[in-house]
Image (cartoon, rainbow, N blue to C red; front, side):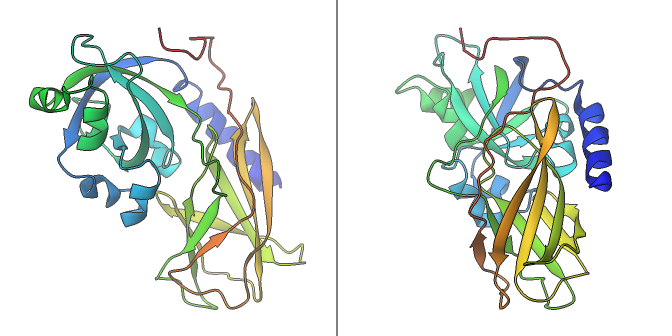
Length: 260
């Protein structure tokens, strides 16, 4: 647990200046196909299309957060009021945007969703638009947090898991694993994006502990009996828990949570 707390303290300090719950001004461009974003740095692959209905986004490093920002949700709208709606649309971060021209590159579906009815093609012709955005909680009302065992996993020598359907407005900053019923916990390391791995795989069925940012501190979410003893690569396993917390960053109050 001491290692968990050190992880959390470092993460909160390093991200305190981001204040991504605040409203930010920037620009956004788009990719013509969502597949370009689903195959991105977070490692979701085709599963990304199930995270935000194809409303996907690549975010700059300050939003990607070395992979901790994967799966984060943002409300984004363009500032051209004759072209776009006040509400805008919600997007899920699935890739890293390395351009310094825009904070986001959206899927074309998400880009068009910012436009008023009948003006989707008009906004596409702009290519890049001025936007404002803020981070919002992700909602998966009928879906628990899930783990996908990656094809590279080889029992009993190596386990790689992909985090799916993470709700709330948090980051997972550490993951522990142990055999079901055991208190002998080992840690996983973030491999890239939403994928975590370990070369020290406990025998039998597996339980997990997730350390997440929550409130002004953090909390541990314990998922019991997640992977069966005969777990298989390529399979998705229900953790039977959901993360719905909202992390409160150490920055000044910036908005009341509503678009105006």
